[in-house]
Length: 140
Image (tube, rainbow, N blue to C red; front, side, top):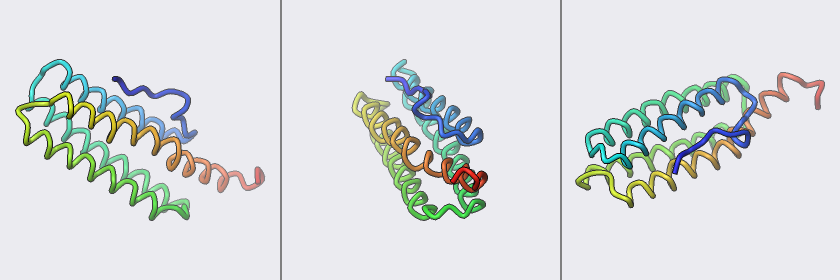
């Protein structure tokens, strides 16, 4: 399974959308490293890199939300923390295994890809819409 950035994931905020594209690219690199049999070391490196980029992205999103005084910031932070926890659990799972297993790949698809799609389509899109409305009050 490959993650794809398509029109359903566009929030309308260029910064967020470009970071989502990059994040999806990192997820695909992780999945490719697992499926190509590149081994545990490569999968661990890709998962670490994904986590680092996720931290950068979440920080940028939360800063934007603070700047626009987004009322759902705390709930959004909670969702980001759920994702962080899911990635940490994947790290633990990978450490316990000889390498990335089929079950590990399924968990990446469920806890990373599916979570990200749902999060972008719901939480992130609402932030972008709120920002747009604040910037264009005449549209209300």
